[in-house]
Length: 293
Ligand code: PDD
Figure 1 (cartoon, rainbow, N blue to C red):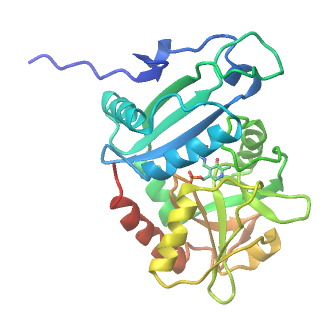
Figure 2: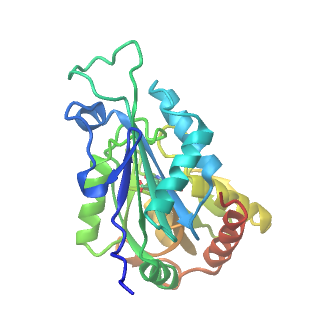
């Protein structure tokens, strides 16, 4: 029997499934020239989409805030997303979805009449061994000043500030950058939400406003805490408070719940992943497993 060649990666761009290496957009796409686009990253578990309704709800909100039309209905988008996962044979990984305002002559002013948005989808496996290692050992974070724009609640692709921050801290052996606002409070991670457990065992994460992304994982973690009868507080905290906390962790769709054991070179708690973090991670998995699409 002849062995079949390994399947190539497939991207979806504007209605077509194309070979990943050959996929592209117009040179005057506003996503490319102005970062005029929004995106979502959704975890794939056992070939199914995690927390899909929450991701599509946030996509609609982001698009609404910058007046880009939804490229297709939620139900058709769900079909296309599942097809991209299937064609890439992704079992445990992620799907990336981006909607740009589309291609038009370069002009700062956004045209009054909406054009056809560009829809891009890609998917790939995630390194499960690396994820398991992060869960078992925890990760280090380093704090840096938050130099992003003032509407971090919209999931746009203007990611340069976060990308530079992450690169800087990776050079110092840390996994994530925790960004600090002008008043000295942690906003969130470069690509995750930030959490601590305070002296009385309450789980603390920053309240929602324009300063942070309303994380889908954040929302499910708050539900997980409620299901476990654990108290939560949505408020700001400083890096100093985080270092002195009994536990810390970070959340994102790809994480999803990662213990933080070191902040700016100082151990958090006993320097090992915390007990409450572990319970939250377990409950989170249980809740999200029940909502696969
Ligand atoms: N990032 N905050 C920021 C700035 C993020 O970029 C992300 C996610 C989160 C967590 O959101 P969620 O739980 O919905 O994934 C918070 C994705 C994973 C990324 O850009 O790759």
